[in-house]
Amino acid sequence: MQRQRTALKVEVPKPKDEPLKLGRVGIIAIVGFGIGVAWPHLAGVRLVPTLPNESGSSKVDLSGAPPEAKPQASAVASALPPPPAPEKAPSARDDQPPVVGEAQVTSCSDGGKRLKSCDDVDFDRVARAPIEALEGCDAARTVSGVLSLGFDLDFGSDRVTRVSSGKATTLTDKEQSTLLDCYRQAFKSVSLSGIPHEHQSYTVFYRVELKGAKVAPGSASAAPEGEGAPAAVTPASGTATVTWNTALVRATPDREGKTIARVLQGTRVGVTGRSGDWYRVKYDSKGNQGWVFRTAIGM
Image 1: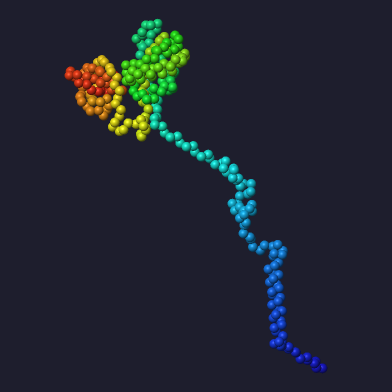
Image 2: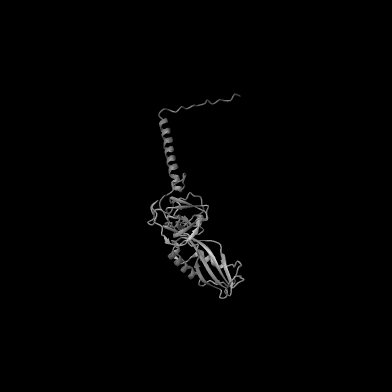
């Protein structure tokens, strides 16, 4: 038996139906796009990060430090070192302490009888500090020269009984008197108790070199270069013997003075004046005078 075949039917859209279908697709696309744009705003979802707000307290910290580690402004200010104090302007004068030599025991005695040999009594342990300090003695601030400073020690009363100056002193009489007054005041309360000794009394001398005050360049008290103030001359009398092989006699009491004569060792000269470490002497039979350094004539 033969099966009956059904013929296939193919329908081709007509040109008039095509615009209707394309318009429907366009409307669907527009509606879908609008829903896609409006949906994140309606749902509260942010698809991209927003820029940080620069106003108010919502400023973003990009340092990465935890909140508790962030320093406060007041803490930072307190951690900073204080500003340096302004430097003190240098003064015109710079005082220098005196240079004190070793103690020399020149004599000792028991009950008024002077002895030929003496032990080295340790007076230095109580004397050196007050000699170097010269506290409250303004006169020492401007004095330059050598003071031969002597002390009479009495271990019967454990006190310094006398303060005096020796022959090696190069200061003026006024400077000596002022400085000795200062030292007498300083040693008024010094006790000799506890110092080992063999005899009742001693005389001890120190060589004290006073350097005075340096005058700063440009200060009012600085003298122009080459125009120093004239040296004060203290009258003196006596004779001395040249101890150097050859002593240079200068026209002025300083190392820059012109050499006017040379005197050989052993020559006797007459001393007529003193200025600091320099002595004015008559060096020949005609009475000509000049200046020699103190050690040249054993002073």
